[in-house]
Image (cartoon, rainbow, N blue to C red; front, side, top):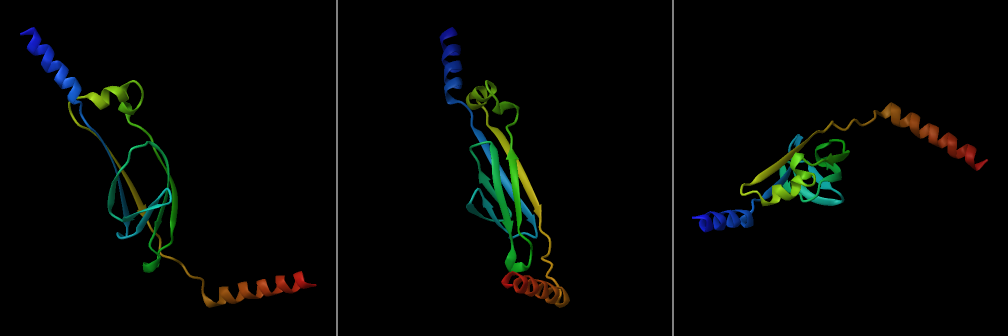
Length: 134
């Protein structure tokens, strides 16, 4: 009986669980392009697997619909089981451990300057160029 219990315990320890890490990006409006650490991953809503905790550079853009681009710095820090020595136990537990993170971005409509503002800027630039040539 002891051999059977010991065998079951060993099998249980060797079959270890699974650590599932997911990162979901959403945006208002949906359909914005998401770029994570210089890699285009797709359009919102989108869920990706991630392996490493840490800092990620995130760009969310939707210029074709007239929205401003958002540049963000997301810090994904580990849960309690991600720190040593708990990370070792989390990887060999006989059940699945899930770490699901969510990042939501609300895009603003792109505000174009009116004609009067554009004319004033053009005049200022012209004046600067004229002074620089003198």
